[in-house]
Length: 172
Image (cartoon, rainbow, N blue to C red; front, side, top):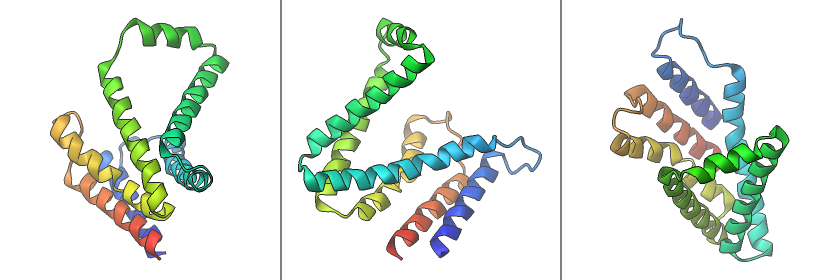
């Protein structure tokens, strides 16, 4: 209960920090927050499914590969339904964005690390360690993005509150 309250407090602080503390700032639509809130739920479900899968098929490399192929398939299906598959192919193969290649390599390393960690650790432990992603994102944004991201004390404080809340929820 305390962990949930801390998570909610941290998220509210983050929203207020993003609006510059102005009450008259136009808030993002509720749907945007629901989509953002749905992502960690989907990641949590994926952690449980990966752990379950690794208990039945012990290969983190194959698991990460199948997960990546599944994600690619979902993207292709979404583009096919939207009628945008030829546009996607044209835009992706006409130029190579090496930034996205680097992000893909980093994501692949993260997935391999995650799958390997499920082999040795409980899913909730992996989830807690994954909850530190916000802290790492802020630190790396500060180093590499310099002024592109608006990092301030309320933002850092809210991320620390959220991570603390997640840890408290996980160990209760």
